[in-house]
Amino acid sequence: MAVPLIEKKSRSYLPETFRIDSWEDLAPLFDELESRSWSSKEELENWLVDCSELESVVSEEACWRQIRMTCDTENPKLTESFEFFMTSIQPMIQPVADRLNRKLIDSPVTTELDPKKYFTYLRNVRKNIELFRESNVPIQSALAVAQQEYSVISGKMTVEVNGQEYTLAQASKFLEDPDRSLRESVYHKIFQRRAQDREELETLFEGLLEKRQQLAQNAGFSDYRAYRFAELGRFDYSPKDCELFHQAVREQVMPLVNELMEAKKKQLGVERLRPWDLEAEPLGTQPLRPFQTGQELIEKTIACLQRLDPFFSACISTMQEMGRLDVESRKGKAPGGYNCPLAETGAPFIFMNAAGTLDDVTTMVHESGHAVHSFLCHPLELNGFKEYPTEIAEVASMSMELFTMDHWSVFFSDANELKRAKQQQLERVILLFPWIATIDAFQHWLYMNPGHDRAERKAAWLEILHTYTSPILDVSGTETYRSLLWQRQLHLFEVPFYYIEYGIAQLGAIGMWQQYQQDPKQALSLYQKALQAGGTRTLPELFELAGLRFDLSPNYIGELMRFVKSELEKIGH
View: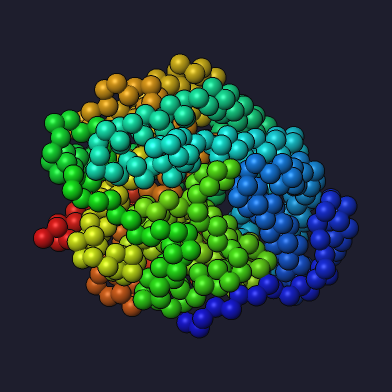
């Protein structure tokens, strides 16, 4: 595949100088699209292209306002710019977007569109029509603003270690230190700092719960879970399948987790394995430090990807040249990491909070997988064709984590360190499943028990957390901290019900890696073929394009876990 040269698509409908400062800038364009008629398939497809161009411009504008705000949550002008878009422009777009959707579906010419090419696109349009309610527009606007408050609150959290101020992301690297007393001290500091904002986050979350329940009620749904499953386009699996996944984690993954915990306890030579021991190294072993600065992380990632596939490397190099990378942790920056697709210009934006750890390497290659997905989808004709299922999006990113391991010598020149890094990565693959099941099960409880109070929420959380916590881990004395662990998960605040995707995708990523072990060239070809399809195929079809099974059964998950365990054992020999 040729090296990508992403360029902003030339506009055919909007002037190149067009800017969005207010709804008045957009209104005439939406009016023209709504009033336009067509009598042939060609005219309809031209209309779809014009709608897509406007949609891309609007989407990119909204994304940039959010990116700038998360990069600097303490700048009131950036927050104001984002909030203005969400409260004064987005609410005006939604009703007319609904009318455009209805215009498309109601047209007899629509039946002439290629059913294979447009099936998933039209299915999403019909879904949006079914969900739209005028009464929900102001609620969705308020939610968009309120959800970002989580980043503002979290971005201000810092602790002092050895006389120096650190963000919580930066401080977490001390949890890898061989000095157990330092680890314990920092662990307490991090959670004591989180506890300071517990009440504020509880209040924020309760407001979000109330608004979400109202959305569902207005749209005629019995509960928010049913509404959100529809909104997320989960056409191919149900809450019952999620419960099957939870069961599989309990039956097939937790025994492996217990083995890993016993091994960790033995490795550290401790009588009791404590929460601040989980990321630690034995005495005499220094924590893995794969890079020192954000720039070094970027350069090494590009070099690593070059060895895997020059196309992947070129994607990240292009983003670097375009200023689309913000990777270092700093005070005032929102927590977490993301890859934000930019619909018109094509090259996305990677945001993360690197502190010099192996987890940062994993995050960077993870987000690079998302970025490659964005590049591969860019040539698709309509913006709607690029709206791929989130589950395949995470297959793109999680597969990249495993694909790149063969080339991690870029980060770890020492053979023993490279071996440790690979071991930790595969252990992380296993250890991630219980947390995914915990968060997903908690979300199901939250929205199937509307009207619950804080005490009930806390009790439910602790019960679910206990189910997916290894008995080998001694958590005595940390009950207060454990009760607020859910507040670390930004998805609960910002993107509700988005988490099971990571579990489904991890299964897909393990399957991709299995194929890669047998035939790297063929596996990478299937990977790119699936990602290039964007959202033009159903989720099971996209898995099939990648050579994968879409299967959440305990038996299949057990099969994949045994493969990961066998690979771990190979590295250990």
